[in-house]
Figure 1 (cartoon, rainbow, N blue to C red):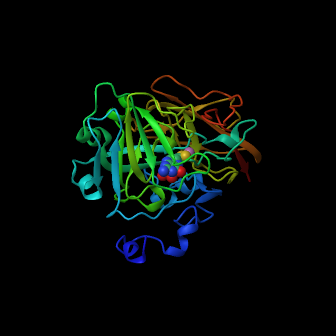
Figure 2: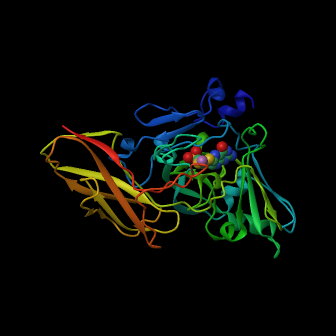
Figure 3: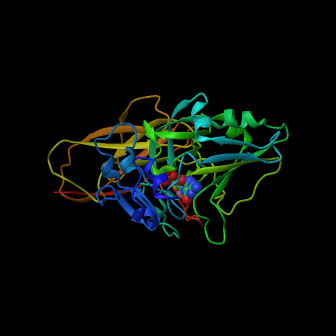
Length: 349
Ligand SMILES: Nc1nc2c(c(=O)[nH]1)N[C@H]1C(S)=C(S)[C@@H](COP(=O)(O)O)O[C@H]1N2
Ligand SMILES: [Mo]
């Protein structure tokens, strides 16, 4: 890619930044960096609205963010599950009827460092973000190529550099999910996708592990047999979690009224109920939240700490499928799908 091509993209980082795994700034008050990944610090969500602003949305990269040119970008559709191959330009995609969707992207390993023992990227709880995505339903794009009745799975592949020994980042979803609510997004919170989040187009697969939402989407294969991929986590839908919008550990003033805020979410269904304990789990109070927010549910409780010293804050959620966060979670060999109640350390001064 030459400099002229880059200049046409307007808001893109200079060429010198090309070798960094993540292009956007990662200030220490917004992010904790783990190699090629960056997780959002939960205190950076305090005072924010429903959506995670793009400047503080976590980044999950296997290699590095590529700087792609939308004008030469193509989306290739092929495979024995389609009537025939098809190729789309960015203008083609932009010309199709658009849909807007609030959805979370969450890494399957979010919360991994909270398991009793773990390997892999030591995520806290910040490997999640919710954005307003705008784009074209995958169903409509597949429809342009014609889906054969014996098609079963859809494999999406990214245009970022391949991972050594594993090839390009790719992930399959069942045809039923592809035709249900998967979106080929080109906008995030009202602006074109930032480079780190998949410019010019990415998949958004609501409720599924983050890896299913392939960024820098370049290739879609529809097959009549299930695909195998080294990037499959053996996990599909996400579990239930809760997090406080507080530093870790948090410090609060003694004898004063505080509003503790947080968010709960589930890959399976909306959140039905959230409870908070400020006394180590002896008593629980119901948190206040609005109804009917699917991607995640912001909540708050009031707390007047009466004793000085270290303690913990607990939050537990139940989703509309009746799934509740367990007291503890046994070790998982890949450190995925953590969902236990978290003891958030707090110091009352
Ligand atoms: N092409 C491509 N898509 C990808 C990845 C990647 O490395 N390459 N990482 C995946 C992982 S592991 C996660 S958790 C999400 C993160 O999305 P985000 O960076 O927009 O937060 O993107 C997924 N899509
Ligand atoms: Mo991930």
